[in-house]
Structure formats: structure tokens, C-alpha cells
Length: 110
Image (cartoon, rainbow, N blue to C red; front, side, top):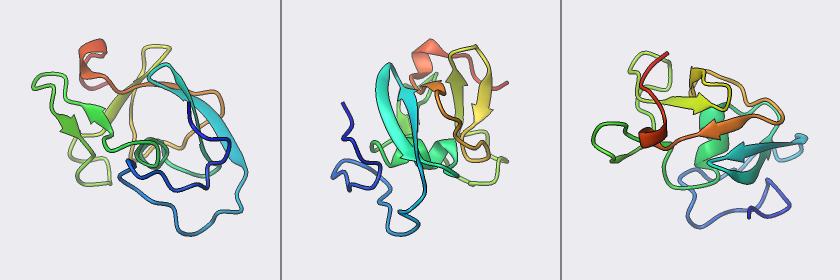
């Protein structure tokens, strides 16, 4: 289970938060586990401050971490609990979001 603070550095996280630590904490669910990020984070930032990969590729099952960071490469799609797919690099995290990053459990694209 993630720590009680979204500000703590996680050794296994791909991204380490260095600034803007005074923003409110947002709780969400990541692959069935409770997680925390900061208000104003993109979904990609929220995921990559929790662990070493953004998602698992749905065909190769290899780890992915996004690529272009502007919504053009199609590499950051993640699925929400309601079935929608979103681009993690362009979508802001919302409180209570339930995100699935396992490629075997989601369809690619929109």
C-alpha cells in the first residue's frame, strides 16, 4: 500500500517529485491498489511517481513509460474502470479515478 504522503520519494518510481510539493493530495486506485498523487498531476505523472512503468504493452507484454508526452505516439493509453481509454500524458488525474495499466486487461486505443 502506498505511503500516506504523495511527497515521499519511492526508490522504485521512475519519476521523483522535486517541486510543487504543497499541492493537495488526490487519492486514486492504480491496478487495484490505493494510491496518492498531487492535484494538477497528469495521469502519467501520478502513475510514474508510484512505480517504474506506465503500463504493460497489450501485445508484447513489455513495460512502457510513454514516449512523446504530447499525445501523438499512442504509447500512453491506460484504461479507466468505466471502460474508457485515456492518454495518460494529456489527462489530468481526478480524485477517485480507477486506472488499469495491465495491457492484458485493456483494449488498445480509444
